[in-house]
View 1 (cartoon, helix red, strand yellow):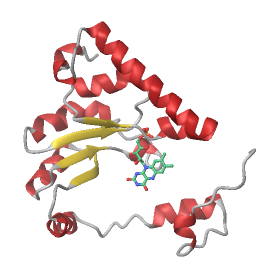
View 2 (cartoon, rainbow, N blue to C red; view 1 turned 180 degrees about the vertical axis):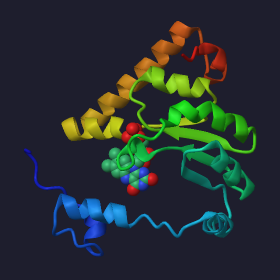
View 3 (tube, rainbow, N blue to C red; view 1 turned 30 degrees about the vertical axis):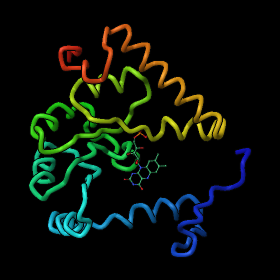
Length: 182
Ligand SMILES: Cc1cc2nc3c(=O)[nH]c(=O)nc-3n(C[C@H](O)[C@H](O)[C@H](O)COP(=O)(O)O)c2cc1C
């Protein structure tokens, strides 16, 4: 409310944003191309020619397919559930995806991680890395760059403190025995 209207300069040349928030929302809905399939992704993996990480995987079967077409990693993500809310949380299927991935794929995860112990739980289940989206964006909106630095500092402190309390000296010490799922 206190700042100028939202601007998306990277889109202004190609997209009519005259309708404000609603036209931005329509753009993000319409840009999702339902014709895209696994063959297209396989082509991208081949064209890229280097390690390829596929973001937005939400099922163990899709992680298997990603491995089969040569992806080096997947990001288990519902993109924060901002459009399709009500999906199963990425964290809730992390262990299934890690199990099918084996050592063929690195599994990264994001969606809803806002505390150091959330990150440690995901690492304990076998995630290679955890992404934070809204966590830093809320801090950015509230307090700009210093807000992001503060949020990341708090995250770091939590990670270090919680690992100390768990008796874990390094990430490799984290394992499934740390968790009791109800
Ligand atoms: C404002 C905003 C815009 C986003 N835009 C995209 C996008 O264009 N493509 C995409 O794959 N993910 C997008 N995401 C999802 C993030 O890449 C990331 O998966 C998500 O923020 C992680 O969940 P979290 O916000 O709960 O931490 C967006 C997230 C936010 C908050």
